[in-house]
Length: 91
Image 1: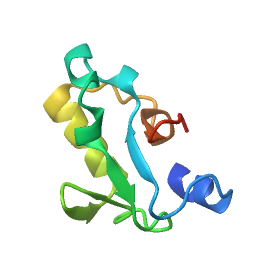
Image 2: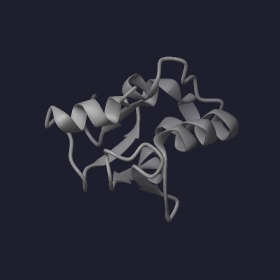
Image 3: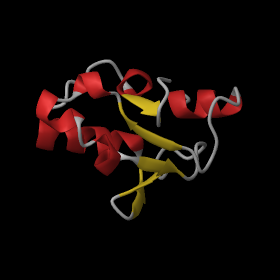
């Protein structure tokens, strides 16, 4: 099954080089002001395992989501397409 990122890439809604960040509403209030620290660059939207560069490594958006759940208790039950947005825009 294709990922949401792949579908958005094919629809030309995002591209390699775009930056994503968590949607503020999934994070606790005290973390929402630090979104810039949680940004990732899209490097290969067609590759589910290494689609973003985050924390200095290429990895999956699912791995970033799991980190947010563990460290910040992010409420990510809605899936990647509702948990992340292009920087400054909701996807």
